Length: 382
Image (cartoon, rainbow, N blue to C red; front, side):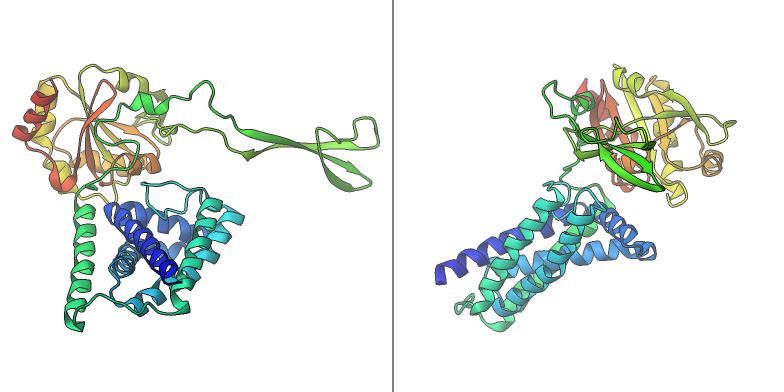
């Protein structure tokens, strides 16, 4: 039993520490996931606090995992782990049954699990947490109470500082499919032998005022008293989906009703053998203006050297026109999906340098490069 408790404590400690750490790597991504949950639960107003919950969850997970891993305050840490599992096990069962989100976000973008995989993972973790509480581990770290508290305080301070850094800059580890060095076309390929979507076609027929559902195998094709009403095809199992599957960039037209044209410039962008600068802001209303204005020298430098520049956003025409009037340089605007832009870069606004379809560099608006830094990157990649 003692060995089982030690193994349970270490496994729980590793999972909680890892989960808290990878969330801390990308607090913006965790906040987005909280927003998805709140919308699915019909609580959109709580979305304003998504970032707070993201910081809190990551910090508490990491602290509980750290305490379990090093056997600090074992009674409190064990109860903390059980409390987590009492909350998240039924939550993940609801997610598995209702499928309101496609990924729980338990391990950020580092490890993707299906909703049912997440639930069964939590069942195992729940069992491990119960094992720890059958009898609280007798041997804790041999240290006085003050030193243990200091150690836990340092761990908590570390994870919050780490989150704050990743929030105010780009994540130190980029688990998303748009990491620096990624050749985007490679992430869009669907192998010939990749699994395809599995679908079922349902046919709806009416008889005597009653509509019944049939499949292609049992619909009443010989009985003319049944009248066809509708046909629906549902996906019962999704096939392979490439890491990048929803990237589309359209030209913006000032005179158009919604600004979006029918011209997708993605192929043109990815085929460009020269450098391209993508200035990305998924929401111009919330984007700070000064970093955009401070890019004037860099944008002029790019245009002098014939590097194409693109301002890509998901904002509406009014917000684009307002932003355009405040920019001290000329740049063409383009439209893309907001979720896609958030995935490309965790900064609003952010800057991405691309060549031959490969991501060369990315910058948070707090770290926009000056001419010297930009030239160093260009020279390094020539």
